[in-house]
Length: 105
Length: 189
Image (cartoon, rainbow over all chains, first blue to last red):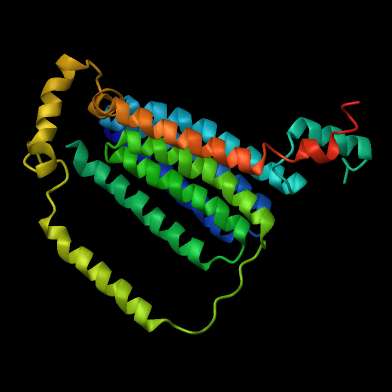
């Protein structure tokens, strides 16, 4: 392991902590969504750097899974904000809203 | 000495876990709490990776950060957006029980084997046997995967059947979604 990689990991940890502060404080919900999504991205990067530090390739698979899950969770949260429902598919929903003229608030 | 430095990363992860735990208890905004639970399981999965428990981390990431965030949002649809402020009453008896249990756990820590100790019970008896035989018998590089998918293959298949039939039963009882029945009937004509 090299010291440079370790310093990168420490920097990523620090930026995760900053994102956490925004998640705790965040005045609006959108600050929190953005902070949570960014925190997930930082975790993916942290895992990749960690895999380089301990020389375990398994952790790269976990990082890929995180990237996918982070995306799905962010879409679910944003859909919840926009439509107040998780039941109906996104495509149908936007079409119906557009037809009803509710799309532009 | 890689372990000397990576333990500081572990400390940072555990400190963030602690902060997130306190924030989940203190915050009133349930949206923030739902997102923080997702962050909590991301952090704990990252910590599992650093403890070399890659399969546990995989499960934690898929279930904790993925499905349960969406399920919590769905549950929040049915309830309130803000939690009620907690009363001023302090439950001293409950606190005493929790403190005693925590003290007992701390008391038990010195009896645990050191992390990665080759002479610990988990590594010495049947575990060593699996480590010796897996490369010849199964030829899967990860021993945990070999145990789950091959040595215990019938057990894992039985678990999958149980979970599948439970999900099927719930779906048959509750229906496969209500949107179609109420609103799309005129579209079908």
